[in-house]
Amino acid sequence: MIIYTIIAVTLGAIAGILISYLADVLPYTRRLTAQVCLECGHRFTLRESLISFRCPECKSRPSTRYFFVVIGMMIVSLLAAAFPVKGLSYWVVLPVLTFLGLIMVIDLEHRVVLNETSIFGAIFLLIAGTLSHGIWNTLLGGAAGYGAMLILYYGGVLFTKLLSRIRHQEIDEVALGYGDVNVAGFLGLLMGWPAIASTLVLAILLGGVISFLFIIGLLLLKKYHVFTAIPYTPFLILAAVLLIFTSGG
Ligand SMILES: [Zn+2]
Image (cartoon, rainbow, N blue to C red):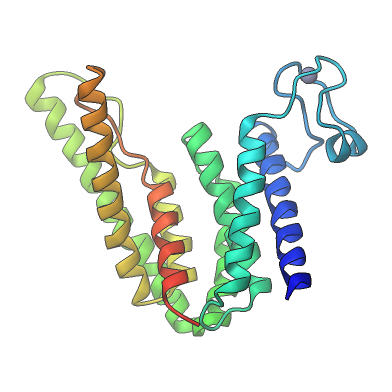
């Protein structure tokens, strides 16, 4: 038992380090390049990025996000080992959660979902989904997730146009980013049909409740301005992960 715990925690830490590395590199280079110090641009050698906790040039330490992600993934990996997911082994679940964690970190920090990660996600989650619930449910889930978000996306574009016409002013922000549509598509592959439907509903509910609290907070701080767009990607991922873990083993 104790040996499994140690293995799960170690693999979680490795997953966290991987997420941190990819989130530092991909948004800037779109490629798997050497880790670069975000403060001074020093290129880390492999040895430095693995064992040193400081940049040799400017002596800056890794961001707090690094520790947050590593400890977070240790906990996630332990949970994945303790609560088996229906139809999927831990060896598939952990890479899936690592991938979703990466999408979430990049979205929270840069407000984007990179096309490169979406393409990777579509292939990877097509395989994971097929292992879990067969090819047809997987493809149907992907089409449903992508299609539903695409309708919401164009609905949002239309709504923004209408609003700017009524108010006689240009509104640059869109209600829903196109990245959210891609995320709903690859989550649809992972969840399959009909689970993607409950995932979308849960994501919209979570997004609504948390945005409501957020708006109350902004109002209290007197910082609220009317058109604050909600980033849906974190809520979509949160909803999918909650449903995966409550579906039972
Ligand atoms: Zn540096």
